[in-house]
Amino acid sequence: MTGRDKFAETQLPSIEAFYNTLEDEPGTPKNYDRARGIWVHYNMKTMRDYHNHYLLSGVLLLADVIQNVRNSVYEKHHLDPLHFITLLSLAWASALKYTGAELDLITNPDMYLMVENNM
Image (cartoon, rainbow, N blue to C red):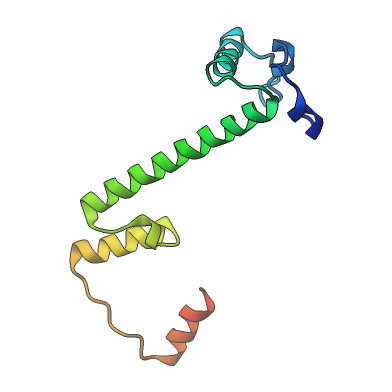
């Protein structure tokens, strides 16, 4: 996809159009046959259909992976990773829960300001 006008194309471009600029090599016949199979199987009419299918399948795969991680972490630690901003904060909460350690409240004003300024 090199421009908006490509969305209106009504057929899959030739294999030469599937040049891999990241690897600096031409598209493989295997990948092109897969693309053609997807085009036919889903009865695509335009490159917009192909583009939207490509994005949707990527998003659904990512959502499946994230849900699998959520389930795995919750099953082992009873913590939901999506309730934490970073993996480090999840690991910290998991460590505190596992060890049963209790943290004291910060009562020293200088220590409190140091923590606040580093957030």
